[in-house]
Length: 259
Ligand code: 13P
Image 1 (cartoon, protein in one colour):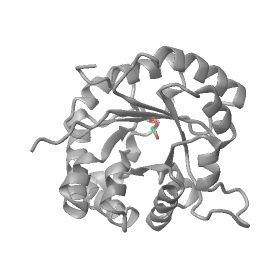
Image 2 (cartoon, rainbow, N blue to C red):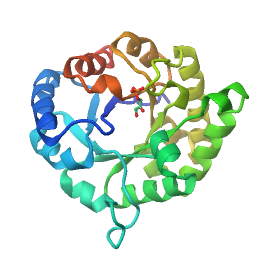
Image 3 (cartoon, helix red, strand yellow):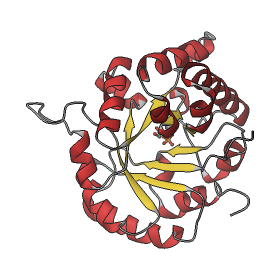
Image 4 (cartoon, rainbow, N blue to C red):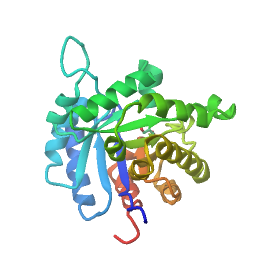
């Protein structure tokens, strides 16, 4: 039996960039420019403060919204935190979890990732779970071991249905914001390894359905070679998603051949 094709998925992670006014201006221009791009899931992840305004500006378009993080409790005395239900109400369908900046700068552990992934599903959000190795780990030859641990601990307890819906982003830390992209072969090799583990640990069907994104210095110039890899289903784009023209071009180059 042949496996159904995975819909390409491209998300722009704006990190701590753009005010509400800048966000609304971007979304209005962006939605007009991508309106005819079919067969690609297109997602923007603005800061929390601009999420609701972005969702309003993207209403009735083919652009969906993601938050950049969440806390796993529904509500309570957790100063500075935002819950899944709050994010859902603000208009997002997705949430990034376990980004390496959260892990290295703000102490998110694999166990925190697991709780956040669970809370995202409980709130009706689709998590975009990030994994990836440091340069040291790659040079020591530990890349697959690190990815295995992040998958095993961070995704522990997910059902097959959840795994099939999940989006995983492979973001080698040494490629983030450095201009040093993984080669298509390095990205392809890591993605094929990740898919193999997902199939092994969660079952062939959900492992095959789960979308795997590459992230780390994705640009107009390198997206085509990255997306051409068998197990690369899209991209999580940082810096190059801040400019409408560049991000439109990246999204456009992820279009399936037939669309
Ligand atoms: P850059 O595309 O700026 O390297 O950032 C990648 C990233 O961290 C996306 O989540």
